[in-house]
Image (cartoon, rainbow, N blue to C red; front, side, top):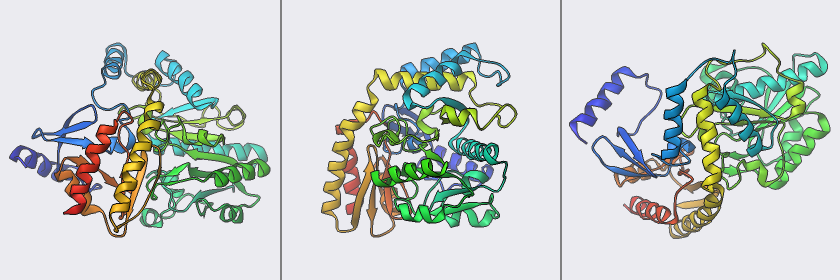
Length: 398
């Protein structure tokens, strides 16, 4: 490590609140599916900013769209209309099949809005304010109070209790567990279509169909969190589209802006007409012209560059190569995931492997202590997969 990079790290440790245990590199620029540190060292990126940079780094069309909007206007507030947000809303409705959109600044903020919408829907239905929400064990929805309240990991919540009330937890992919938590106060069930932080567990067809039927029977709103698994990552624009099980409310973020901090929650027309109204919810920055321009261009590029087709082709190859690794090493218990959201589960902590991979020029992250998560840019090729596998094997073998 150069003295320049070392000095920046030391400065960061003095100035920034220590809420992250950062890897000891300072990233400087990106190109394609590679990142470069201040010393010029190249890293193959299989994290994509935690699923954000779907289009890779340095995409000219994307960059030009942002530069053009910056030269026009960046922000006006939601007291006024702006064309980029209107265009973005139209395109995300088409991509998702949902009817109403609220743009936010992040995924956690999208979850907050979704929870508010669900409780407002129930309040307008019966006038009560004691409604319950069912969430899943081992889920992750964000770090703000509402999102944390429905995150199914007690360790994340315990120092910040009490959370928002009337939250109950069931087991993912266990329909009877969900049914056991339902009461006449239940207003919503929230879950990730693919659990990410909780270990890369996709919902089963039987489970998601069963939860949808339960919600229909009881007038419960189904909220699907597609923040990490959405935007093409599973080979569908949104993971629930594989099952043709439409949520009442959906959250999305990360690759929606491909680097610009944006998110959204979307809902059906029925929920839109019977939940949040003027004065119920708001945001200063959400859906501003710069964010709208980013979403607009991202959705255009997904279509023009056939991103979904590439995910389907390359993900099958990634699964094959990861299965070969799993079969080769006794320490690897399982390979699971969906599309370009994959995980390898080991019988021991994976921190040393991830650190060794970083030394060898490969960026990986974990999902829990013993799972390596693979969430590369959606533009990766089979040769990128081969390079990753080569570096991973060298990092496991030492």
